[in-house]
Length: 79
Image 1 (spheres, rainbow, N blue to C red):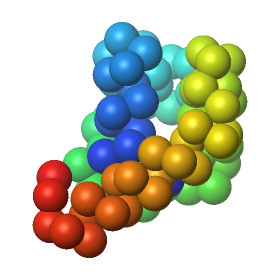
Image 2 (cartoon, rainbow, N blue to C red):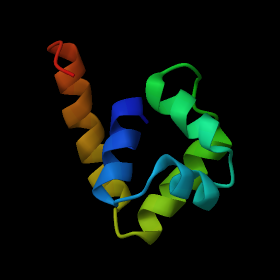
Image 3 (cartoon, one colour):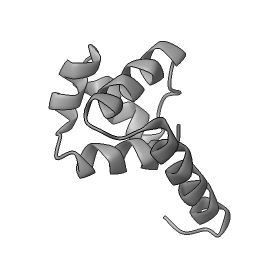
Image 4 (cartoon, one colour):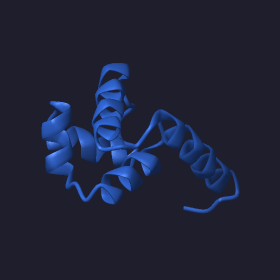
C-alpha cells in the first residue's frame, strides 16, 4: 500500500495519526514514518491497517482501485 494512499484514507476517515496508531497497535511515530516514506510498511502493520479501513467501510476493492489511481499519479509525477 502506498504511503500517499494510507495518508489519504486516514484523512477521509477523519483520523489523526495518533488515533490510527492506537487502532493499529503501533506508536504514532510508526504511522508518521510510513506516511513520509522513511520506513517500509511491514506486512503485519499493513494487515492491521486494512482491518481498520475495512471496519470503517472501506472495502478491499476500494483500496485496490485507489492504489491504481495513486500509482498512476506517481507515474505522471503528480503528488
